Amino acid sequence: MSEEKPSSEPEIRRGDFAREKGEVILREHEYDGIQEFDQKLPNWWLFTFYGAVVWLVVYWVLYYNTPIYKTDQEKITEEITALHKKKDAALAAAMESITDEALINEWATDSTKVGAGKTIYTTNCLPCHGADLSATMAVGDQSIPLPGMALNDGEWKYGSKPREIFKLINEGTPADSPGHNGAKMQPWGQMLTPIQIAEVTAYLISENPKDFGK
Ligand code: HEC
Image (cartoon, rainbow, N blue to C red; front, side):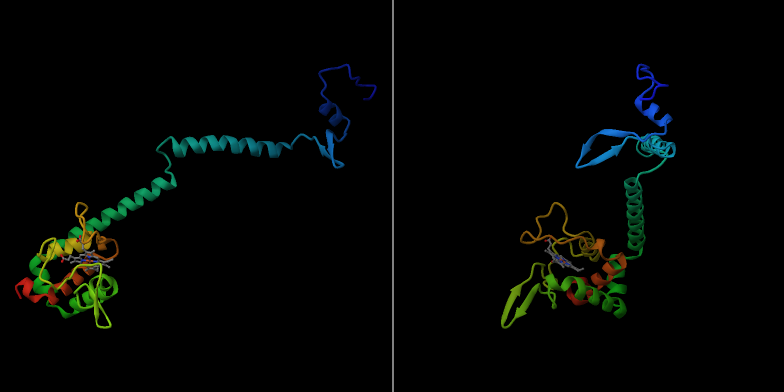
């Protein structure tokens, strides 16, 4: 303590006093010989910090409590809804031309479409329905059953009209059905376009001429 500023003046805090004198202020503790400065943070730092605090409040209000800005979650949900709408519209448009008659008389007689359908079948359906549509697989001289149902036995569990078969492939096992031996089929509409499903339906029709008036 210097003589000009006696310690009896209580309004002068130690930090101010030391700063006026150009002294470095040290905190009182010391650990392992290490001491800490006790400096006032520079104003640019402090105001950056206060600014960040204010911005946090503004941001939180704008994004989470008003409709002005959307959160990422809201943006994603909107985009997914738009995609679903687009897909539904595409399906509705496709189904206008893909009628039962068109599937039997146009699609199933068109070798390009049936060929495309066969490729789709081989890639996606064969593991459960078998290479010969019998839902079995030959191993040596044994025939092993596969999880799917036979697609060449003249029976169509969910309707034998081409559009009913299309619908089953598109939407999978209906929610209220227990499936086949407990196995349900997935909705292939999530992986294949309406055109591809029509092609694979056409392939199934062409392989079952007796079932479809041909
Ligand atoms: C993971 C195995 C699996 C795959 C892969 C699979 N299915 Fe299925 N499929 C099933 C099962 C299980 C059923 C029986 C569903 C039920 O009873 O609800 C079935 C039923 C069907 C039926 C109704 C059969 C009938 O006799 O009524 C059709 C048609 C069909 N699938 C077509 C397809 C097509 C086309 C594909 C490829 C795009 C395909 N499946 C791929 C398991 C599969």
